[in-house]
Amino acid sequence: MKALITVITGQDGYYLSKLLLEKGYEVHGLIRRSSSFNTSRIEPLMSKYESENKLKLYYSDLLDSSSITSLINLIEPDEVYNLAAQSHVAVSFKNPLYTSQVGTIGVISLLEAVKNSSKNIKFYQASSSEMYGGEDDSLLNEESQFTPKSPYAVSKVFAHEMTKIYRESYDMFAVNGILFNHESPHRGETFVTRKVTKAVGRIKQGIQTKLTLGNLNAFRDWGFAGDYVEGMWLMMQHSSPEDWVLATGESITVKEFAKKSFEAVGLNFEDFVITSERYLRPNEVDFLLGDSTKAREKLDWSPKTSIDELVSIMVDSDLNLAKKDGKQKR
Ligand code: NAP
Ligand code: G4F
Image 1: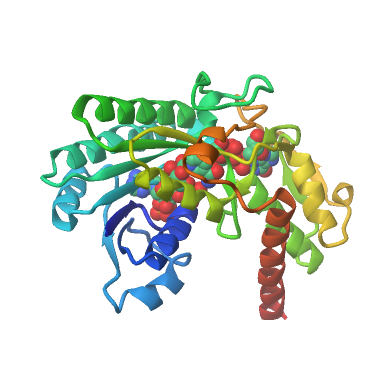
Image 2: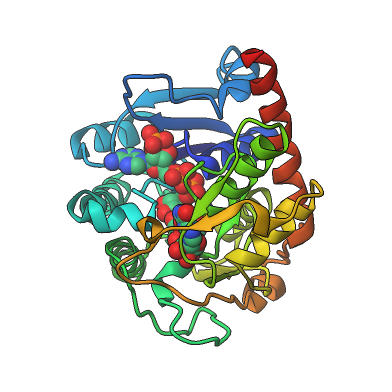
């Protein structure tokens, strides 16, 4: 089996490519040109699988439709996983055009290339719980209404609906995975969980003194990214193409996540966390709680990692990184 992952260098790109390589797939991954190295997450996979020709990397960009079409025709993958997005909600308010271009035109380029291929290719679109808008404390499933609150969320609704249109119009195996927040030691450092656990490690090691956050009262349903990529793969193996929610079914506030993280190293959250308007958003998603009954029943998928285990995995990893950093500085 051949999979194409657009793109492979992000958090989910790492966990998904690892899963597929371990399953014996040939993995083809898009990377973007950057002025500095951007493959740090996948380097362990590159050293293990590139020499066996099981992992192949290609420079591209979702906005370069000619390159996307050429690569689909060259690789002829069995499955395409579209993970590419300007995925930071706060940044999407600052860069609405770019966020929207990648999330709309970029996704159509990919859908067109898949549709026009002579091969029957399955397509996965990374949809998001952010599309719901989180206006009240209801449990959200595949039937719940979307009320997007950011340029990011609007572009995800567009891509979600377009994926459905291609599925219904052209009989394509095209699925939307509506994933609630999922985190890991490989999470980008500007998302709140990783920002917290990185700071906890550094404060514990004496190389940082304070942590500045924004809204502490937002609720999120946080799971572990390693569990969620298994759900993505299961959706692609199901007998029919459908839309699926992946979530833990538990929601806690940013404040509770931060408290747990500081407690994990014996520190008190109140002694270190301050808040600043700088990190508030023009429009906030207050409450997200997912109901993944459909995936549990029809895909036999369930999250294996509890919120306390997730905190522990992330804090341990960031504490180790801070120890190394501290040694280098001495
Ligand atoms: P991530 O680490 O930010 O990865 C997103 C990837 O998109 C990055 O590798 C980035 O490339 C790439 N990208 C950005 N602009 C691009 C462009 N113009 N062309 C091609 N690639 C581009 O995010 P993630 O957490 O792994 O999330 C993966 C996908 O799932 C994203 O679409 C995200 O919106 C969606 N999602 C995530 C969550 C979550 O909680 N993690 C929940 C629901 C949905 P670089 O590596 O070069 O920057
Ligand atoms: O970690 P966040 O930036 O994630 P957010 O906005 O929920 O989006 C993530 O999950 C979505 C799925 O629902 C994905 F689609 C999306 O791509 C991304 O992966 O913020 C979480 C909450 C927000 O309410 C934010 O206002 O934390 C709050 N927050 C408080 N202080 C902060 C901070 N967020 C960030 N990034 N940085 C802060 O200092």
